[in-house]
Image 1 (cartoon, rainbow, N blue to C red):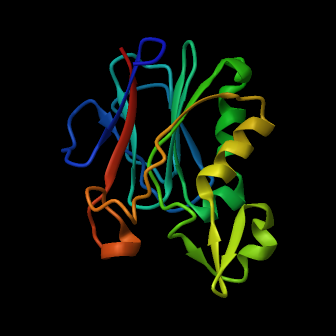
Image 2 (cartoon, rainbow, N blue to C red):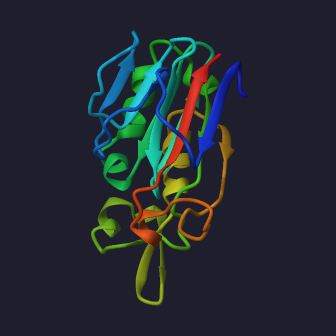
Length: 190
């Protein structure tokens, strides 16, 4: 619990009437949920100020990000395509009229980490600061990239689960298992 908001990460879950999940497509689209129920919409971030509505994203190796303000909350599915397209910045821009960004609490959940997140040469151009080279291969630190993006927007209050989804057998990983299983990371205003 943070500021009267409940953040949850679940490996086993079912959809329920008070849960809103966007149709995730690795975009930079942000959905502002001001009424509920709301039709499923393509987007990789959701923000709301509705009490009792759980908003969530599903991940298997991408970074789940939760943003908690005094009145508003947000949840973001951050894959490399969304990060490159500015999904974190766009979500914060959406919250800016309602919240002082420096007062937000940011929670970063488990994801593929630099120990296992092997990427291609095109990442040298996109994310040069977040790469490590080992044995002729490139590895990216997505969690650090997300944290630096948040810091650049004035957010310094973090919670972080440093577990790697690829290394941790108890967490779903698309890279490891090619699984359809997903983590649900969600937040709701109590």
